[in-house]
Structures are given as structure tokens and as C-alpha cells.
Amino acid sequence: MATMHYGRGYVYSIQYHLVWCVKYRHDILHGEIDVDVKALLRKIAVDNDILIIEMESDKDHIHLLIDCKPQHVIPSIVKAFKGVSARLLFKKYPELKQRLWGGHLWNPSYFVATASEHTEEQIRSYIKSQKKK
Image (cartoon, rainbow, N blue to C red; front, side, top):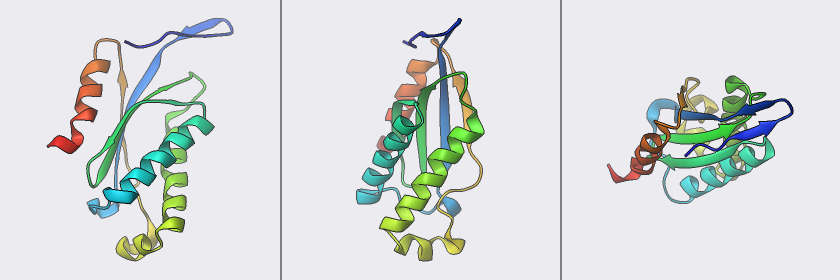
């Protein structure tokens, strides 16, 4: 169930389902890289005062269900997640740059949808099922 948050003079509950893919849909999100990207995304979320409610990957894409403040702007959130994670993963795994021509880890596009108290549980179940397909 979505949590209500209280700001100064306002009440909010904002959740987004975010999905983005690895450039060229290469299957790189497994093993140590998968563990590291999730740890990085959690750290980026904490640094930006965003709560990751649910997260899972499936070889070439990643799903997040996040809870954020009204001050957060979707393009900025996505830029932080994708930009910082790519930079740090390339630093730790330089061989990824050779595998992904041009040195881009993530596809520039992404999917975003709002979640409501009626859809949050469906989205959570869908994200959890990603590796089980």
C-alpha cells in the first residue's frame, strides 16, 4: 500500500515504474555486474532522497518501482540513475566499453508510468517475476 508523506503544507504519495534497457539489448545484467548495478542504484536513490520500493533486472533491462517527492523531476531521476551507474560500472568493468560499441551502457530511452494504490501490487509482482520468465 502506498505511503502518504507530509511536506510543509502538502500531502503526497508518488510512485513511478521505471524501465530502461542496456544499449543494443546486450545481455550483461547477470552475475557480479547485476549485483553491482543494483547496489549502485540503491546508493544513487539514497543520495537523491528516493526510495526504491522494488527492483529487478532481466539480462538486458531493469525495472524500478520508486517513491519520490513532488520536487523530483522524472528526466533528472532517470539521468541520475543511468548516468552515475554507467560511469561507475565502466570504471569497475572496463571490458564493458569494448562490448558496447561507443561506450554507452544504457539505451537513451526509458519507460515511465505512475503507480496508484490500485496498481502498486500488480507492478511489484510484475517486477519480482522478471528473472523467472
